[in-house]
Structure formats: structure tokens, C-alpha cells
Length: 388
Ligand SMILES: Cc1cc2nc3c(=O)[nH]c(=O)nc-3n(C[C@H](O)[C@H](O)[C@H](O)COP(=O)(O)OP(=O)(O)OC[C@H]3O[C@@H](n4cnc5c(N)ncnc54)[C@H](O)[C@@H]3O)c2cc1C
Image 1 (cartoon, rainbow, N blue to C red):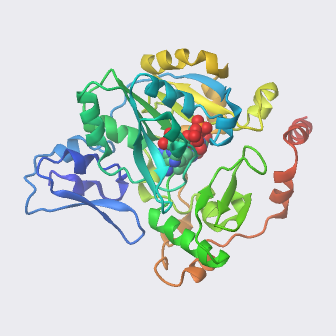
Image 2 (cartoon, rainbow, N blue to C red):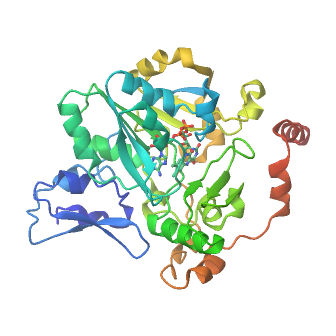
């Protein structure tokens, strides 16, 4: 068999195969966990092998890249407050728009479904800000990007490593006007699980959830804090106390392929890689900011040119790959697959209240709660004393 069926559960869901198929015989269908996988209409398939050739998991394109590493903060503190880490994505996107380009990234739709969209206006960039901890629907975006590039437009694409790899495999060649930004990624839960969880929260609060921010800085600054809103209520807290978020942070609900991710290493897919610079308070306390610090990996000459053009709006300090990897596990290996992953999605279609209690239940953890409210400087001192 010379088609994508050979991939099985290692599929990352990028949809490159569907978009490249000359016979249009591949469609992505939801499995019982709520992840999308390719299904082939064998009666139409001619076994041309295009889907296998352009699959980023079966045929990953790796160039040996040694990144330059920075800790960085966007100087616009209001914009950074709405971003996940140091807000670096925004000036990168703005520079593309300044060149008359188009920016592709992940946004929530009106039902809080994460989808990749295009943005051509600076006033709409806010839609792409913030990490959505769920697999984003990439739809037919790669074909649209190819059309933009073929009509000589500048394009910025941002997404997880596998989504950037999918785009590169789909295009099959380099384009000077394409810049890619990949984010360091733990793994992604299923859109169905997130939708059901939002529905559950809506029932719990008596009205639909209209806003869910996984990385809100509103109450406690930069960290793993969520904020949700209904029409009348708002609630925020530590991500570890929220059942869906806790399961995500503990790696219980990821797509199967994420535990075997080919892109969780330092040989990155994007021209630029963005992440949180966890641990900056210990490495370089003066550079720490409660508003967030980004880890930036400049992987290519193109990425470097763009980076240098942002000098006037970014504060940065050079770091090392060693330090970056120490604090960011997914830069060296995929997340570990816990045993409970075998049955974490069992029961998702039944009584969801019971599902939350039985599968996503969070045990109260007093030690963590105390740790979360201690100031960073105090935590640094304790860590320093313990090291002695
Ligand atoms: C699922 C997921 C897992 C992550 N895991 C890690 C990790 O292990 N370690 C770490 O340091 N950082 C991780 N990050 C990245 C980090 O949280 C920030 O996105 C990154 O630091 C960029 O932040 P920023 O402040 O520059 O900009 P932001 O404004 O936060 O940038 C948002 C960018 O993220 C993209 N994005 C948001 N949600 C998704 C999504 N669901 N799928 C694809 N792209 C998305 C947008 O397109 C946009 O480009 C993860 C992000 C996601 C979405």
C-alpha cells in the first residue's frame, strides 16, 4: 500500500496529505477521542504516493540547524499582557503586515473552537495572541498559503512544530517570502474534549463560557493561570486546579502521535521558535518580568534578518541552548505517555460530570498552592539556600 494509511496513530493531524492529494480522496474524520485522522476513499485512490511523500512524520525535512538563543521581551507592555510569554509573536507578525504580507495563526472562533485563520490587519492580531491548549483546526490553510506565495505575497505562518513541518512538506520547496514561527509544544488535547469541557463549565456556572484564556496574566502575572468569563461571571485561578488544564499539564490527554513527536528537539522546523523562558528568574534575575519573558530560538538566516529588524522594539539578552533545554523539556524530547492515557478518553461520550470526576479529577495540593502565591524573589532565595 502506497498511501497514508500506513501512518496509523503517529499521524500529527496536519492535513498535508489531504491538501496535496491530486484525486481529493483523503478526508479527515474525527475518531472517538475527538482527534482528526485521514480516511482514504480506496475506490478513488490511485496509489500515487503523494500523501506519503509529503507527510512530515513519514518524511520529515530536517536541515541541521544550530539556533542562536535569546531571552526576550516586547517593549509594548500592554500588548505583552495579552500574550503568553514575552509577547514576541506580535512584533514578528506586525513586521510581516508592514510589508503588505499576511499572517496565519491560531485563533478561537465564536464558539471557542481553535482554528487557524489569516490576518491582514494589525487591529486583528489580538485574535492570534495567547496559547490555546487544544489541537487547532488547520483546515485548507496550506493551499491558501501556497496561493499567497505564488502571487508573490509575504506570508508568516505560526503553529506547532508539526504544523510548520506539515506546511514545509506540503510546499515541497523554500519560498523567500515565507517565514515560519514554531512554538515549543507539550502536545495537544482533542477539540472534542475541550468543547465538552466548556459545555460542562457553562452548565456549572449557569450560562455559556464566552472567554477562556489558558495563560491569563490578569490576576497573578506570568504563569500557568487561567481566566474564564460568562456574561455575568469571571473566574480565574491556577491551571493545576482546573480539571481540563491539570490533565493537559500532566500530559494525560494528548494526541497519540504527540508522545512520539518527531519535532520535539532543538533542530526546529520554524525560522524562529518561540516558547516561555521558564527559569529566567534564576538564570538572569534582572531580566525577569512579571509580564512574561519569551525564549526565542533564531534558526535560520531568514529568521535572523527578521529578528535584527525588530531591535528597536524588543529587549533581549543572549542565552545558551543548554540553558534553554534545561528548563524546557520539550526542546529535547516528546512528553512522556502516562499509563492513564490508555483509557483517559473512555467515557467522554457518557455522563460528562462523571467523566470529569473520574478521569480529570484534581487532588487538592496545598504545597503547590502555597508555592504559587510566593513572590519569585523569595522562591529564588529558597532555591539558592537549598543548593548550598
Ligand atoms: C499547545 C501548546 C503547547 C505549548 N507548550 C509549550 C511548552 O511545553 N513550553 C513552552 O515554553 N511553551 C509552550 N507553548 C508556547 C507558549 O505558550 C507561547 O505560545 C509562546 O511562548 C509564544 O508566546 P508569545 O508571548 O510570543 O505570543 P502569544 O501571543 O502567546 O502567541 C501565540 C502564538 O501561538 C500560536 N498558537 C496558539 N495556540 C495554538 C495552538 N493551539 N496551535 C498552534 N498554534 C497556536 C498562535 O498562532 C500565535 O502564533 C505551547 C503553546 C501551545 C499552543
